[in-house]
Image (cartoon, rainbow, N blue to C red):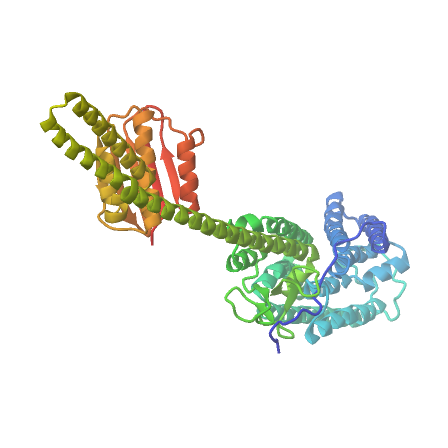
Amino acid sequence: MGGVLGRAGSYGSGSAGVGLGGRPGRAVAGAAALAVAAGCTGSWAYGHAGATQADILRDLAVGWTFAGAGLIAWWRRPANRTGRLMVAEGVAWFLGNLQGTSVPLLFALGAWWEALNLAVLAHLLLVFPDGRLTTVLARRVVAGGYLLVAAGGLLRVVTYDPSADGDATYLTCGDCGPNAFLFRPGRDLFEGIDLVYRWAGALLTVVVVVALVRNWRASSTARRRALLPAWIALLVALALVGWEVLYVAAPGLLGPAASTPALLSDLSEMAVPVTFLVGLLRMRLRRAAVGSVVIEVGADPTPRRLQDVLARLLGDPSLRLGLWSEQAGGYLDPAGRALRGPYPGSGRSVTAVDGRERPSAVLVHDAALGEDPQLLTAVGASVRLCLENTRLRSQAAARGRESRAVGSRILEAADRERRRLERDLHDGAQTRLVFALMSLRRLDARLADAGDGGLRHTVAETDRTLRMALEDLRGIARGIHPAVLTREGLGPAVTALAEQAQVPVVVSVEDRRYPPLVESTAYFAVCEALSNAAKYAQAQAVSVSARQCEGLLVVEAADDGVGGADPARGSGLQGLADRLAAVGGVLQVHSPPGCGTRVRVELPCA
C-alpha cells in the first residue's frame, strides 16, 4: 500500500546516453558493423535467388531502418533493451535471405531462422517502452516465440528438401540449396510440420495481441501514448500473419498479386522503427517544452498552476506535485493535503526535484516518464526555478508590504503633525492676530474723538498689515492642512479649494468620509493638479471628481490645456506618485500634446 510521503529517503535518478568512446559505445559500433554485414550478405543471397534491384533495395530499407533506429535508441538509452531488440530485429530480418544461396550451410541456417525476426518483433512489442518484461504472460509468450523458432524451425529444416518443395519459402528459388541439415526428406512429412509451424506462429501472435491489450488497459494516459508505436507494429504483425495464413490456406488465390501484400507489409514494417524514432524525438521536444514551464505558469507561479502545467506538458494528468512542510512533517499537494506515495505495482514513481537529503519538492508521476532521465532532470530544474521564483516574489512582496506599511506610518505621523501645526496656528498665532486687530479698531474709535489725523492714519496702515499677515497665515495653515478637511471631509475641502483657484473648477465629489490619511492624500493630489493646470497647462476650465469604486477612492482632475505633462520630468507629479505609492495608491497621467491633461488617482479606502 502507498503511504504518506514523509522525510525523504532515496529517490530515483537517471543518466543520459554515453559517447561512443565508452564500453556501451563500442557495443553500439559493433552492432552497427553486424547490421551492415547482415544487410550486405542478405542482399547478396537475395539477389542470387533472382530478386530485382527494387526488391533488394526495399528489403535493405526495412532491415536497416530497424537497425538504424535501434542503434540511436541504444546509444541514447543504453540501460533500456528496446534499442538492442530493434537492432536484433534489423539483423534477423536478413536471415531468411540466406536461403537464396547455393552454400548448403548458409541455406540451412536461413531456412531454420527464417521467422526469427517475428519472434524478436513480438519481444520488442512486449517490452516497449520500459525495455523489460513485466508480466508472467509476457515472459511466457516471448519464451514460446523463441522456442517455436528454435525447435519448430529445426524440425522444419531437417525435413525440408528445396529441390522438392521450392515454393515453401518466400524466395521460391528452384536452384537454391542444397540443405545441409536435411535429415529425413519427405514431402508429406515436411508439409505437415510446416503447416503446424505456421499455425503455431499465428496462435502465438494472437496471444501477443492479448498481452498487449492487457498492458494497454492497465496503463495510464501517458503510458498509452508511449505504447502507440507498439500498436502500430501490432497492425504490421497482423498484416504479416494474415498474408501467411492466406498463402498457406489458398496459395493459388493470390496469384500474380502475391507480391502486393508483401510490399505493403514491408512498408508497414518500415513504419515501426520510424514510430520509435518519432517517439524519441517527441521526448526531445517534450524536454524542450519543459524549458518553457516558467513562461507557462506566468508571473504568479502557484503550486496548483505549476502542477497543471507540468501535467499537460508531460502528458500525465495524474501527476502530483508535493511541497515539503515542516509543520506537517511531510509533503503536501497544492490543496494542502498529505501527498501519498505510489502503490506497489501501480506503474507510478516518485522523483525529487533536487538532490538534497530532504528535497523541497517531489513529483509523483507515471513510471513511463522514468525512461527519459534527461526529461525528469529538466522538469526538476524547471520546478526548482519556479519555486525559487515564488519564494523570491513572496519575499519581495513581504518587503514591499513592510515598506508600504513603514511609508504609511510615516505619512500618518506627518499628517498628524500637519493637523497639529494647523491647530496651533489657528488657536495660537491667528487668534492673537485677531485680538490685535480688535484692539486696533477700539483704538481707532477713541482717536476719532481726539481728531489726530496722523495717528489714525498710522493705525489704519497697521490694521491693513495685520489683516494681510492674517490672510497669509491662513493660507499657510490651509497649505499645511486645511481645517475644513478635518471638520467636514473631502467634498467641502475640494469645493473650498476650487473657489480659490485661478481657473474655473467644476467639482463632483461624493458626500462621504474616508480615513484621514486617504482624505489628505486625495486633497493634496487635487491641489497639485489644480496648480499645474493654472501654471503650465494654460487651461480655461478644470473638472474634479471623486467617487468610491470597489474599495478604491478614485479621484480625477481633467483640464482643457495644452497637455504634454510628464511625471518623469516634473518634481510635483513625481512627488505625488511617491506619496501615493507609500499608501498603496496609483497615479495615472494621460496628457497628449494639445489635448489637455487627465490625472487619475486610485487610493485604497476599504
